[in-house]
Image 1 (cartoon, rainbow, N blue to C red):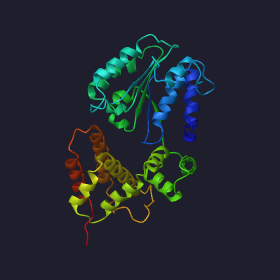
Image 2 (cartoon, helix red, strand yellow; image 1 turned 180 degrees about the vertical axis):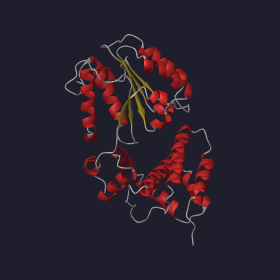
Image 3 (cartoon, rainbow, N blue to C red; image 1 turned 120 degrees about the vertical axis):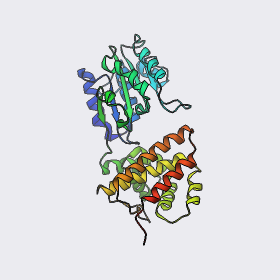
Length: 317
């Protein structure tokens, strides 16, 4: 794991494991692109490794080799199926049954619940009893970008592990090494629009998507015809929604005096109603989720969002 901002958390979790103080349901949450999945994978490996070396899994025991091959019989990963809108109750019941079985390798079983906030109500309710009375030697690792979407009854039974963006200097240093072939100004811009999340910034630079994001900002800032904007945005709705969420997050930061950064060559739109911006941000997150599932007409969702955005603009003289 070459993510220096997670080193202190890794050491703390390893110390908890050694001291028997790690709760059976750690909930790892924080913004996108900060390393929740990486930390969750590491924690599952560390729990299942039979010969850990300090704070790290050994990488050589049978358990580590099985994880590397994707065939560990005591590691269960639950995520939103490609053809579904969320995590269903049958998936959770199957996970609970597996966690109650005797371990095949070592003495532990680990379930990893990716996008835990995507559980529907029945699934979350089915999980409660296991959270209250976990089987011996079983852990359930929950990952979430929006923990507030989880029922309070679930959150209260988990051990909270909050990840936040690293200090700017640490993030910039890591990104400079990870994307050394890219332009320095582009790296700074990518890190800013991703809210200081280094992994998200790296993905943005490697995908070449920064130009797309700046074009969407120009749409938000200018006087382009409504129909022309929608035609461009519908070319890749999931990417459009992601950028809309990023720009709204920056606007929220500016509205609360927490951010002063401006994109190169243009200014952020002059909207200061934080509650309204927050609503548009949440709609963008929801829109991206729907776009990835492909079950809702994106032209209608994007059109409605754009109308609300235009209504939020201050009066032009």
